[in-house]
Every structure is written in structure tokens, then in C-alpha cells.
Length: 255
Length: 255
Image (cartoon, rainbow over all chains, first blue to last red; front, side):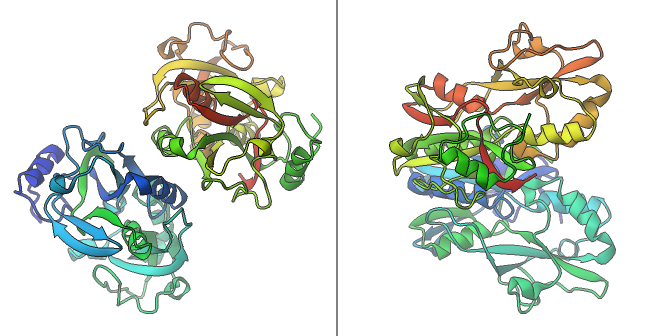
């Protein structure tokens, strides 16, 4: 894949001007990318509490003050325009996908930036642990599970996990490496045995693309940033706004 | 010191019945103890955000739902009675120290349990790193610094740090061990050079007891759980309730 934008600020400006509307994986390499969740202030305490109680699927990179649009870890940014695509949910239903949310902005909006797996995936590849979905340029496979998140106020629901096939001899190394990235979902929540998570068929993921598992590999599962979207749908939240799948907010943070 | 209560539940019940009103250090050994901060729900989002933005002085062990009194990591407990002593602050001023707060309780109270240093201190002693204030049965020395915490809403102010003299050859080991305890303030915020923190005289701490520093030692500084008390005073918070110094909430958690 061709890297269009090396500089995170230039990438954000390209989003703002409408010149970049693609998934962000591989762009601004070495910079931390984040999931976005925006809720009105009335729901912000409950959601912040939900993230605090469920750090594996919802590791917080930054929580913005009510109404704030400039992200502290991305000076000069505008959270309402600098993502390639946004999704708007009302009463738990997806109602719209759009290129900006400046025209919807309200002073009571609180933006949550939640870590994503790109950071540990890069570290795993560098350490000689190949990731099949990266090599095949596919989206990672994701599944709803029977693991109940710890509820907080109106937010409750099951954890969504991502799955990567890992060679048996690499599993311990993978855990050691991921432990260094608590803000990118950290260590796996489950190794092997998908049925114990309520997953009947690994080849039928709920989100993303299925990926082959070879004989010398085990499926390894991580808390996934899709969890807050699923939980807000399950909880019929009156209003929330997220990034569109694969179209992340690119911070200035290195790691 | 004689350990009166080995069992955390028995210790909490003794607090509740008025039979235990002493500092908790050394009691229920091996169980995680926590600082307490209670604020009304109107200030709870800002304070939760403050903790999220300042994890070194304010590592969150548990945030309770509004009005809740039973701590999840201490089944059967009552946060309004199970601490040996409480302090009540109004408009930033200490107005009262009392044995229980059940008679003050309001359904909008949100309780925050914040990690304390006992966990890493035990681990350091076990690893052969002696801590002078522990050996001398004194309170640790604490100082207000010139390090501005990242503000959140109405909460702003400088970080309070604790200081322990560490032998030069042990400093790296101390950092490695403390890295395993992010919920107990984690790694030091500063090593050596107290003047850079705005501390003019290490022998005149703002809280706790002064401790001698030998020639082969350097002063090592950690984020301190007194920070939220200081910040709430500085911010003239209308109402907050904390534990009394040294009288912590004892959880069932091991670590």
C-alpha cells in the first residue's frame, strides 16, 4: 500500500479539506491512531466510568473537555473534521455516515479517543510475528462474545473481541510484547477455545474479514474498540458519534 | 507493630462497629489499601477526568456508581462506615474529622478509590530495598511541587509527591519493581534534584515526617494520593470527603 501522508498533521488537514477519505491504516507510520466515541455530556460520566471499568476493550488515550474540538495530543487538530469518515447513531441505530460533523456540533459533546490495535500489530510484525490479515490487507476478524462488560450507568453489553491466529511457539512472546501497549488493548483476553467465548464459527466473524487458521496456530483474542459502538447500540443510547470503520483519528503521539 | 486484623472483612467490620480507629498500615497484610475521595455527582465527571489525565498521583482502583455504598472489590462493605476515620472539606477547608459518614450520606455521592503506595513498598522491602520511614515506623515525607497536574474542569493544582531515599545502586531495580504496580502510583515521577520540583528543603516536608538521606542515596519521588485533597482545596470544591491520613479503605484485592 502506498503511504500518502507521512506527517500526521498533513493527513488530518487532508481529511479536513476532503482530500482524504480512505482507511488510515499504514498512513503516518509510527503515530498512534485512535477510535472515536462522542456522547453528550449527560452520558459522559457513565461512559467514562464504563471505559475505566473495561480498560481492555476501551483503553483511554484522551478524554476531551465538554465542547472542546482541539485534541491535546494533536495540536492544531479539529475532532469534528479531521477523521476521514464519521458515523452517527440515534437510539442505538446507525442513521448516517458523513465526512464531517462540524455542522452537527454541540457545546455539550464530549469526545473520547480510545486506543486501537495498530500499535501492537506493528510491534508484533517488527518482532517477527506475522499477522495474516495485515499480509492479506484485510480487516481483522471481530466477534461478539458472551463476556459481559462491567456495566456503568446506562452502558452495558458484551465485549467484542478481535482475533489473530498466532503460532503456538509465539503466544508467550505475543503476550510479553502486548503488555507494553496497555493503551492499545494490552494483553489478550483469551487464548484458544473460541466456544468458551460463545463463538460457534471462527470463519463467520460479526465484523471484519474471516482469516484462515493453520494447524500450528491458535486463535488469540483481544478486547476490541468496536465494543463501545456495540454497547451503545445495545443500550439504545439517544445519540453518539463514532469514526467510520478503519477511518481512525491520527494523533501526534509516537509509540 | 501488632497486626490486629488479618482478614480484610473483619477489619472493615471493626471499623464499622467503632472497635478500630487507628492507621491501617500493616493490617490485613497482602490486601490492597486505597485512598478515598467522595464528591457529589455534579463534580464527578470532572474529577474522573482529572484522575484519567493524572494517573501517577491518582491511579483509580474503583469508581462507584452514584449513591452506591458497597465497594465491588470488597463485597459486604459499606464505604460510609468501614474506614477508621473520615475528613469533610467544605469550600476547600477542612471542617470536620469523624468516624463515619453514614449520617451525612447523600444519594448523589460518588466514591473514588485511589491506589496507595503500600503495595509497592511491600514489594520493595521483599526485594531487599529497605525503606527508612517503614523501618522507623514514620509517615512517608510528602511535598507540594511545581509540577502542574493536567487540569480537568474545576480541578487544577500542583502534584503532591512522596519521597523515599534509595541507594544509587537500587534506583533501576526500584523503577522495574514499581512498573508492576501502576495502580499504586507506578514508577517514580522524578529521581534526584529536588530543586527542579520547587522543593527548597527536603527536611521540611509539607505532609508526613522528614527522613534522613545518606551519602550513597538519592531522593526518589512518586506521585502521591494526597494530590486530590490538595487540588480540591486549591479548587475550593464546595464539598468533598476523604479518608483521614493513614486510615485507608482496605479492599479484598490481593497484590
